[in-house]
Length: 294
Image (cartoon, rainbow, N blue to C red; front, side):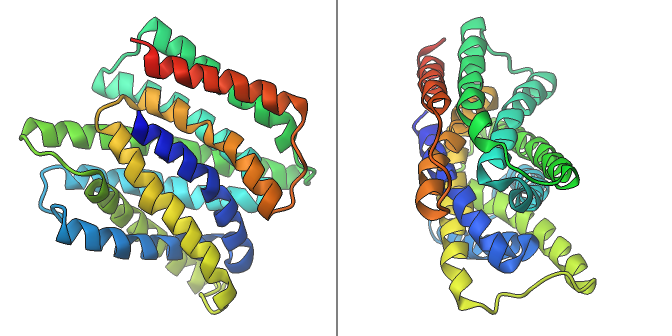
């Protein structure tokens, strides 16, 4: 579960960096350039210290990247400017937990115990109680509906991506391979880069993309790459290697609660209401229960 905790801490910062990068570059280029940085860094690790692409499961990780980084990442970046980091991540993380648990049960036959499901539900309830009042934003109905739609699509992509990683680790184990988390993250990022690059080319062809010319955007892109696909997803793969996605994802869903202090500091967001602290207590209690439940 240490991997899930590390993922949560990294993903708490990611939306703030992503939102700032998206405002400066546009959603699609911001997503693309963070993946470029991640592929370079993770590729150096995988080819020098890991197994490169010489694994039986690399294609499963790649498809997981298409779903998680590709569909999930692009959709998340399209949701952020419309809903803000708090509401976008609230929808994405909570719905992704439900998608991951359901898909893992249907496809891989992984079921959770009654106590695990209770504590997972308690965690998601705490996240919702803590964030929903704080996350409501005043935008036009059309903008709000589009933001929610993109967030839901992102959740489906991220939830499915987590289950593809679970499948990949199972395939590797069946041939007695142990794929390190950094190499797994590299394979996933490659899939995301292919998808993100194709979307960028399409958008650029229609005249809707800005290239990375403003050097002031680089700190946000680098911060997003470091906390997201590099460290965050490496920790994510570490957790998924040994723990069902239906348990990992609810813990990761706490990340939006931790995003609030960073949003206040970086984005000058409003301070949270009392419900935020009540929800945080419930979420932490639920996450603790997940780690102790059998």
